[in-house]
Length: 580
Image 1 (cartoon, helix red, strand yellow):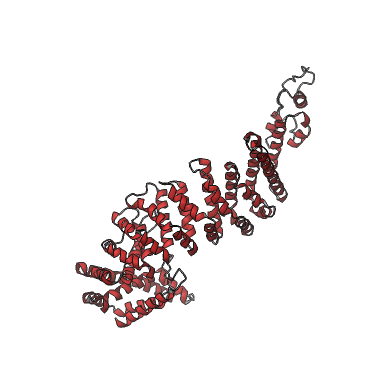
Image 2: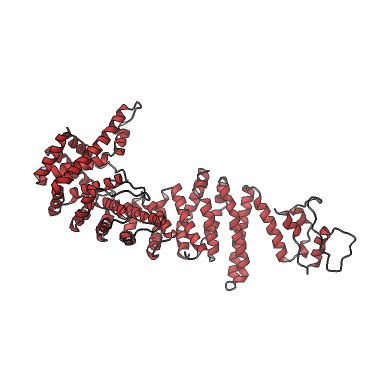
């Protein structure tokens, strides 16, 4: 409490009696006569010479009957500020929540009574806003969250999200964002769980979506409200990832797609929307399916088409572009979306991006890897051959694109994506297109055969080194941990490489020169075809359980009748190895 403010406070001159009351406390010369109705202006006392009165005693000695309404409100507000500065406990929090409930009721009453006269209910809304602002202190004491929940505080706050005055709803959003801050939630996880449960029970995401629809991001305060609304969802899903599915069911995914599609160009709100969508799609098939059904694949392709010939201008815009690619790749992990990707001319757009050599090049390569994987990627593989995509992919097979410091992607990761694309082409292409793929390995004196064999020895040595380190480790390590260590060293990529070798060098390829070149290189390096066959046999035996290091699951993701296709491919590989 600022004592100077209290000591300097004087009522308005017309309130003569009040002036005399306060004037008597300030007079330094008691013998000085005062004119009737006009007290002499007292000299400000020196705090070192006189005892400092407390605010409570000062107001207690004041004649409230002689003060105007505004003067009494000012004094009461000063007392409230002093009380809010004190340490918060359960009692004071209950008092604050009770006061909030009263002010909500008062504001509703004034709005109903004077619906066409904002001046009449404006004071009540100012008081309501002040009551909301006072609750920010709760965020500093998360151990009191249970009081907020048990006293129906969450319901009161949620009722204000749809308030007619957007300033009130924005104030509530700011408060909830602070309450759900991840650092605050981790301080007391039990209390945080109560808060998150209460918010989820009130379907906060649905309320936030409705509120965002009426906010204008061109207005700074409302743009902050949108940003904080997205932050609330991010905080809640980070604390409890299972809420991602519920959030999309409550309309969040539709809201994000609509905002991304409707607003041309780039801004910070779009960046946050793309980031949150990437989080929602990361590990949830239900959300990926919903995105496809909402034509989200087409929307993402339309947004990315701009970067076919344009590079992002800032690091934030580059992050936005990468988020869009991440959303697209995550959605393609749901098999049905690969068909939607094909219908949206996705292979054609990615092929053009690879040729343009812009910043979108690495993202396009990664997307093709996801789109061409598995039986569901057959038509995308066929399409890539039809649009002369082999002329784009095989030069990258010889020399993978450089990594990007901004995205954190390395040349080695791009190399793995290219190898995966070639393996998908070898597996999924049929008829004339399959022969066109195999013929690529005979060009330029079989340089691509030399390249695939170079990659075989490179990854084989890395995996072998990891296996040797496992054997030399003194600590006991189970079989699964040893297998994971080999996967980290590049086992899955080695399996794809050796699968390609077995396919192109088999009798069914009808190109004897490829087989001769493979055997020749193996003999020159004092190796044998058995090492290749062993890797492919291990790959076949683990088919259906293997995951790529970048997160692509080679098990089925639609949960329906795809096990048969995986089993047939497994048997095909084992037969191919035996007949080699």
